[in-house]
Length: 161
Image (cartoon, rainbow, N blue to C red; front, side, top):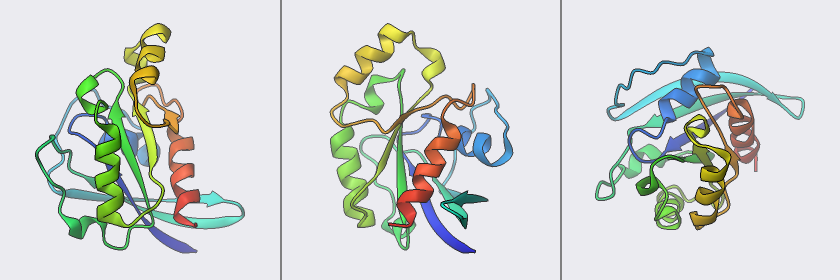
């Protein structure tokens, strides 16, 4: 079995911890508890006949003017940038945010995930997709367990590149 360090980054309150809890524990809570610093979880996944232990670093959410410590990025093999589909401020400068993550991590590819699909109508979702400056890899809902596993499997795949 191989172990791969992967990161979840994005603004505060976008649902990074909820995605991880849903993926690792199959649990969801409406309670918001802010992550301080970094929290590491792990789960073994199978991808293309390989067992991969994902070491999932849940990096504390930031606001626009905060910087994530570079040390969190060391040794990361893949990263997921999560934004909140219902909060425009989390995706208006997506290209800039993702560019910062690429610069800090040295990763060429970042998985981009729009979370909280359950809070939008189909028309609202389409409007968000039209506003976002980068291609969205997956639209998820941690609450409804929609596309969560797919998002982490994409992360596992990217960690092997």
